[in-house]
Image (cartoon, rainbow over all chains, first blue to last red; front, side, top):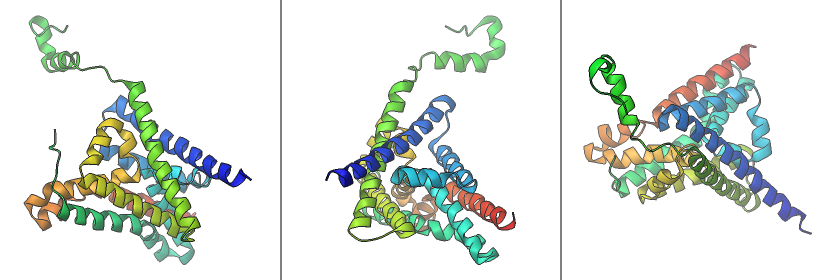
Length: 127
Length: 153
């Protein structure tokens, strides 16, 4: 009777643990190296691309769901996955696959940021 | 303390940096990591919640499901940036707010808001990609390389 609920709860726990762990690894890297946010984002995105290129990130996505797709490494996973699946359509597919799979995220970021930029003014001053 | 005079003057810059650093509060590794873990985990749980909603209520699956979850999270990230809330979360959580996709949204929305005063073309539109640009450049490069290797190997 409670089994479907337990399964959903277990899904949340896995997402929390895996997503939290990825963020914690990033925090450890920041603590020890003084890398800026932009570099951390690039490094983690590239890690996602490489891991999916080796076929490993898919296991993490199957295991943790949103815990693996929500961090920026999931964006890298999307890019690599799109390019790899594009190869079914030959050279051109491999060429267009990466961006077409990431198009939702990039379009959303551009459109919503433009709207927010129009609607709001910057509140916190840069330190 | 580090001497700033005498024979140490040879390493003036190095000594000065060490002297300044001796006044820095020590990094609180455990506290930082715990906060990053909690906030990052919570954002992923919001993602998981959206995943279940879109799957059960709207019947999406596969790429469409993942795409819709990203779009909604990016919307939330830009909205919170607009209200100035995300910066406060960022000060508390560090990497816990940078690494999730909402941090990517924040890195696009916050320069868009900040550089609006410099005009819509060279201000807002150009500066929007100051952090997100490198991610897209290296992402497309690496993704295409993976695709090409996959095609030819």
